[in-house]
Length: 168
Image (cartoon, rainbow, N blue to C red):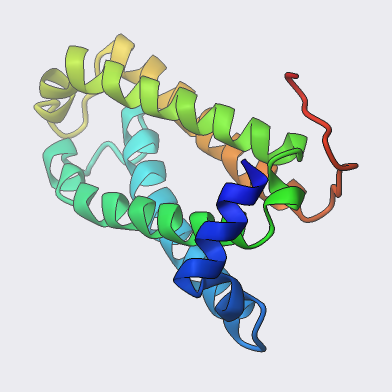
């Protein structure tokens, strides 16, 4: 896996760019921009589901979703650049493994929301609480995204020994 990622990184020029003077800082800046777009959108929407800002219509907040989706894809691209340029520091790092786990949970939680209570939640009138199921889903989402952020910060502080895996 490490060889595949390094070959991909080197054949696409990602490795050379990431190891240049500006590569890492530029990509990290875009990663944080994407994170801000994503968490800004998801966080505000989840807080409204939980009852904060009841004077804001849910349908109006839902119009921000494309910004969150764009932020997510920006993070996928930049995250792939990080991973492929130093796979040995990421694959075996329990912080990134945990981050990916919480990303998976957030994704499943989002699918549950859109397949169960999204329409009902979006039609919640101002000054009203969202349905209980939607509030629970919003709370789980907020916790998952907070965990993603915390685990993302921990990646740089934990340098695992090579060939170590949390779930291996």
